[in-house]
Length: 338
Ligand SMILES: CC(C)(COP(=O)(O)OP(=O)(O)OC[C@H]1O[C@@H](n2cnc3c(N)ncnc32)[C@H](O)[C@@H]1OP(=O)(O)O)[C@@H](O)C(=O)NCCC(=O)NCCS
Image 1 (tube, rainbow, N blue to C red):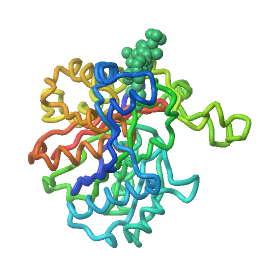
Image 2: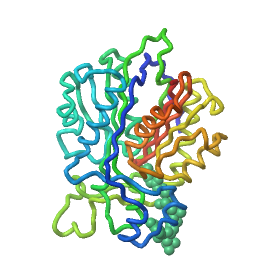
Image 3: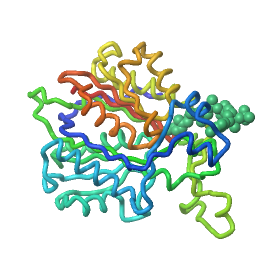
């Protein structure tokens, strides 16, 4: 893998966090009544106990908008101050307009430029990096970066290999240009990103796009749902998340020993434990909430960041390591000084 580019960025700081999880809880026990599975299997293989399912009338933009409102309230920022909205999602409300446009309308952020990013579970960190670029060029000063998913709309409820893993939810942060000379809290110190499109077929939703439109003939084979080679995904997730973490720390001039809290993508507790072990970090310095929510793709990191923030687990000066992996394959990591 090529060395990460050095990146002397103008500072961007996370000044507010927010999240929204739908009310309906779907437990492992509930799933065992739908497919041939058990709480014991799901818990021991993934760490997941339950997940949230959005109401039929809730679209991804509804979840995203509520998370955004909460992030703006936590930042003390009015909707008119938002100049950029990026929504990371693989479950857009529709092909177009972008989900971010619907969010703009729902929250009244009339001065924002809005678009979506599709990078699966790495989407939030990709979006964070894009927002940093806007801020770095002086183009924008205040942005909403949102990870939001209604993955229940992409699930084949007859496929036990995938239906037990995913859930719905949304998380958001407000980021703002910070004076370089001031030690602003929430400063993003580094971000690395990577992609390996040769493995694009390992984790995908094959149908519903231009390559394979849904037709009366193919609809029964569920092409518009998540297809995944679990073991292959697992293997690459551990390798890439570890590599990205080490690179992001190196760019920030830090080591794993400096990390106060790791907020990893919440896909599987075994993946997270493997990374913590290789970074030589005890699990009490790793945030996990996948037992409650499962894998919410682009939403996992901003939701976990918000929960860690609200729980008082982020203290001023703490080094927070964010790291993600997802379909593409894509991966990314950011280091934040809280
Ligand atoms: C999906 C995953 C949990 C499966 O765990 P695993 O230990 O690799 O399990 P395997 O794939 O080896 O399957 C073992 C057996 O369990 C079965 N199984 C699969 N899902 C099951 C379920 N929900 N309940 C019960 N049995 C199940 C399989 O059919 C297989 O049976 P077989 O041996 O008779 O063929 C794991 O591979 C994983 O988490 N991969 C990464 C997924 C991920 O992170 N995706 C998102 C990335 S962003």
